[in-house]
Image 1: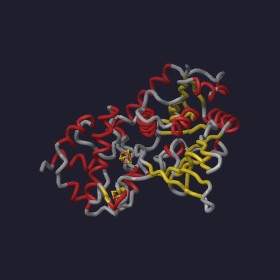
Image 2 (image 1 turned 30 degrees about the horizontal axis):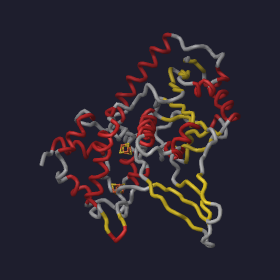
Image 3 (image 1 turned 45 degrees about the horizontal axis):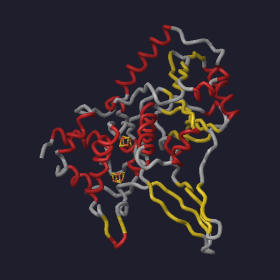
Image 4 (image 1 turned 60 degrees about the horizontal axis):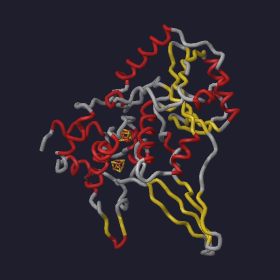
Length: 342
Ligand code: SF4
Ligand code: SF4
């Protein structure tokens, strides 16, 4: 594959060419914040954004999706979204989250609906240009990324290095195949951007190495921090909804009034919500707020790492910003386990 060097005009021209060919989602300004949305023109794309309100997972696991349609006469038919699309401007930490979800949805019970969308997607990662106020990806080893994406764009002194890594990326970059290759000096400067980003994306400092978290949590189940923080929790689930590594869902059957046909849909769910662990008979395995609060941190720092070998918090900082009770900061929670031993 190759690494091309484009000036801003050439980058815009390339983005326009991509938009002409297929569905493109890109980061755009929404009042004073940023969001991934359908991209109509290159001028709307903001690669200098700090963080998006929702992570790009919404394109692989939509908030609400139809899994199948059923009909008493005709039986049922699975529904798949198989139109190719491009997601432009994904930050490295969000790409790490997508890579983790890929593993989780391919492992054990293969999730054909998620995997179909992943097959159809071409992902253009963009190295971070502006740190958000709560990001701590630099502590989690996710401030930069070296694989899993199709194309990586890095701004280097006013130009853009476009690193094409996969056949899908090559197809997307066909219109810039004649652009000059990145020179040795630009590649050196790109390494400096990466080193700077590791430092810059540490607005909160984790006091231990992330790979120690499973062991730390292994001996912190009865720590008072769970009760103390959960006392202020509204069980609103905002921390779940904005998290790029949360992927839990609920499945519901919506039956037509005729009772002859309907749809099976899945919708996002969140482990902080009161009825997340509710089952038939009025039982609830995590009725207590503190149990739900603790469960979230155990998922991120112990249970999922034990499954896939990676910490399931990429340090995007979205939950910190989204929590109106100001209790969801994972760095504060984990640091309190380190420093305030029960
Ligand atoms: S737990 Fe918070 S900081 Fe970590 S990935 Fe989820 S939203 Fe981002
Ligand atoms: S966002 Fe804060 S208040 Fe809401 S459920 Fe999460 S921890 Fe609780």
